[in-house]
Image (cartoon, rainbow, N blue to C red; front, side):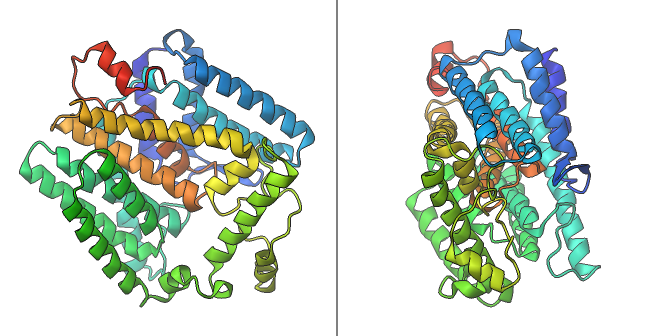
Length: 408
């Protein structure tokens, strides 16, 4: 399969990712159209093995992962549908991540496709709020929280990538677009403002784009936003940590944390296996509080947090390996900006936008969006894996290997 076909399939995945109401229901899971296209993408990678090369370290990790998860399915608590759904989702993501240095992507068309898609999401949210009178519109997305994550991810990408804009006008338009998308995100009442702050701050520091003055001004702005949030009942209920009984998000988070801790004792090192979240008995005082409110099953099957879920299912060892993989990609941004591989130009701006957008989605999933089969998860993982972070054409191979950490 020629690389151009893979490239066009990437663009197709990005084009359909905002339409979460389109998909295929399989058991208790709903697979978005972009997820189905993503699985096809991973299969084509495997059939295109002659041009795809995995490092020895990744081969060892992948074989260990497959072996352990098959064993845990036989002895663990997961049902076949839950195991199969989680196994397909995570395995295809790992295939793409392991092949990332061999995969083609043209950042500029991907940049514009993402912007158009998020623009449609923003427009549908405004329509839902202003015309249909919805209190928390989700637009084209499945949930308001996810819609907010998409919007703040776009905001973070536009703000940070403006540093690489080739003209002052383009930089100003990028900043203006970021502000507008951020404003629309408030209609979703999503608490992914934390994902926005973490992504923008961490990538700003790693890309050497943020100085002390920017950090101080940003901190003041966040303080003002926090103060404004206290006047909205929904936001206030989510950020009030003094009374857990009135904060459903906090109760769910604490219950998920207790489930993760229980998995350490019940399934040490290797986890409960894919699909095992919520399938074994554990004690949490917060489960009783949720049951008292008539919400005994709230987030029990997904642990509320993506990080909690993968730790429960993969165990601490494989989870640590996954986090190291994420960390290695973040370090590539630091090396690329320090080695001059991202000069000020349109291609660099597109790459930084896509990488920032993707990392915001990945962090948001780890924070509180743990469903494997939705488009924001695979799109975040896809772009975070394959955006090259290199817009200079003629680069010595030794420099490229140093940026990539000598072999994925």
